[in-house]
Length: 320
Image 1 (cartoon, rainbow, N blue to C red):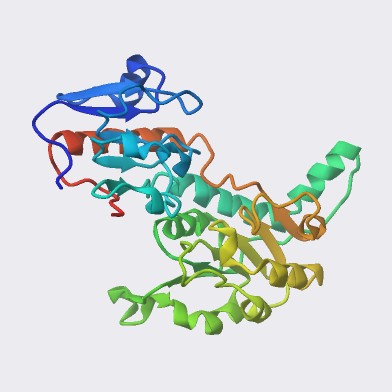
Image 2 (tube, rainbow, N blue to C red; image 1 turned 180 degrees about the horizontal axis):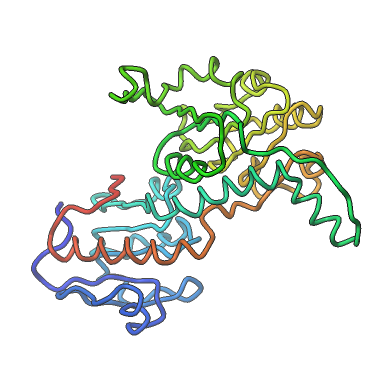
């Protein structure tokens, strides 16, 4: 099915009203009618007529609980990069598009922030501030460190760009398959995941940003953590299930390596979980994409997808 047609179509957009939509998106394409709704409000009454449904940010597959009533639905556009929770509930014949690219800037920025905060003890200093305590601590700089990016896609590349000003010694890239770079005279610019055991011992900072798939679940286990050099930092801004929590707890509790985590398994991390108490573990509550950078990028994606759909063109970020 080719989304869109020459007739008037109906899109659901997560804005308060048309004035907000036009301010944020620009003009709405011809032949598209809009119903508006907020993330915390009820679905519009036009549930049987909607053709293009933009899922609000931070809302999940529960937004498709009434999918059986959406008998005219053609496209579901999420505002998240991960869509594994949507796939099982998608109606047959409906196109699913994710928001790849929307979270690159925010997530990459947080990854670097976690590296800096962990190395320079900003979490410790924040706790000391609340106590009025002046506690000196010598920090670990990003400068001269060997960084390994595990899962070199768009966000991995965005992380590398942001590291350029920190005088890191090197950046090594890992993805599912090797990708060559002619400038490297045939050497792999991106290593295949099979090279990971050989690369981990040379990583001062290992950043996990691979997608969660059956193949990557548990990718970083006891053996991989043990392969990291003493004093290394593991940063996870992907999904908690890529890292074995028990193995990570054991390695960080010993003080041998550090960790900075935006995601955990389980998630949310229970308040009594021992990982909270490990001195060299810094945890943020899965806020990689949650910054002001999200909104303009999400708006640009929605506007571009609506324009393609109205023109009968192929959509971007199609998952199925």
